[in-house]
Length: 308
Image (cartoon, rainbow, N blue to C red; front, side):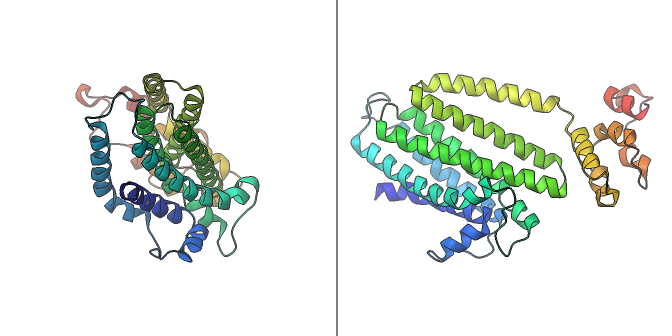
């Protein structure tokens, strides 16, 4: 009973995310279970509050059981509950991964009855959430349960399958960008996917080597700080402009001018260099309340680009 109470909320969230990420997988599960039709990712926004409360209460309860002795000596009941939880999640992930193998191994795989743009668009945000949730679960389990062979095997299997799910998300993202072009959000999602995949691969290595949670958390902190520093140092708006201009240089009519105008002034040097012109060119990047002749509103980066 306890295992079901712990497993079912996680299982429900994973099912909703995976079915919204792949309509073909959703149709298969719909033949077995009754699932809501036309599930929208925005419905997930109604779940996190209750799910987060449940998750925090669950972690707090397990972290404050008075008769636990250390982190290594765990009750057989705890191992059984965790084994059931990981076993069910692994079965769900295996069913999803099995369906994604043709897509991963093929260059031009698209399910019948679905356009390539629709197929490429669905899934990468939902699958990113799956990776993030699995990473949180892994960190909690790694901290509390060490040295249990069955748990290590099940946890490793979950991490490996989640990495494959992450590769599916990345391939869909690359496919969609090859069709529709890049945006700032798509770049951030792609980089965050890479970051989570690295965490999961590190997790598998730490489980194999039986290293401590403290060591893992230290390396994770360094990796997170380094990744954040690198990303904020990049001129992502210029990268988006350059990628899209290069992609559609042979067919300028397909270039989304409105998307370029939504970029910040950091993209202006690239746009000028490529000689892209559109209406209201100057008003796009000029900020009326910012004057380069007044000290109080002067900004070196902005004024250097405007006056160049």
